[in-house]
Image: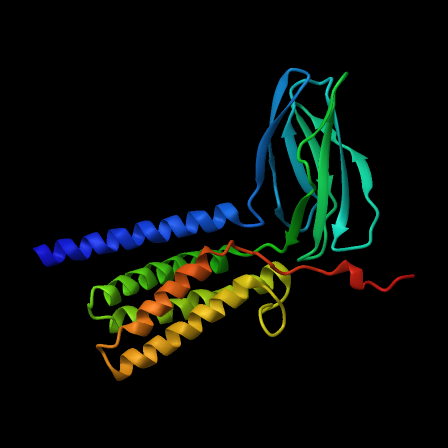
Length: 269
């Protein structure tokens, strides 16, 4: 009974750590919307500015502004590029002012900044421009398994690390961590990358995408841990190391240094 209770408690703790890691990663990533509020003409304006959008259409940035005397404008340019800023007026649709950011090819990025204008006041929503990245639409059959299996891999990794610390058996946990990491990260991950940005792999040695690179690092650590545990079922040092490395790499914000088109490499006329 005590053994069962201990096992359940450890799985619950592993689940809580994994959930906390996932939430932190998503909330700190460069594709997470920027939220805030400004005050203009005695009206508090709350905004949510998106930083990722699926093609094939312009990205609508909606700001709730009920006061029809308040208008809006926005500037934008591709990034990284040598483009000049383009300025356009926002379009009113009921209580919303909408800025339409021109669509780009997959992995194309655009910087934009929104300004509201009242009768006597003028205010920018953000001090610095926001960057939005366009992507292709990822089908549910690729996205859902990727998310679920990667989550399971993180959970198993955390539980395996606990088992190593408590000197429990780690062979099965190590094996299943490796299997789920391969399926979720190295099979469904590149499929998602292909649909979203047109490339199977953009990590080392082809690029700097940290999402790909951190998956590869975690995979290599778990491969070596599996080899060590296979040779010696009581070997736990590399299992703990792999679990710690996996926790660290998955704390890195999602899509940091992700795929992007370098517009500065365009042929000048």
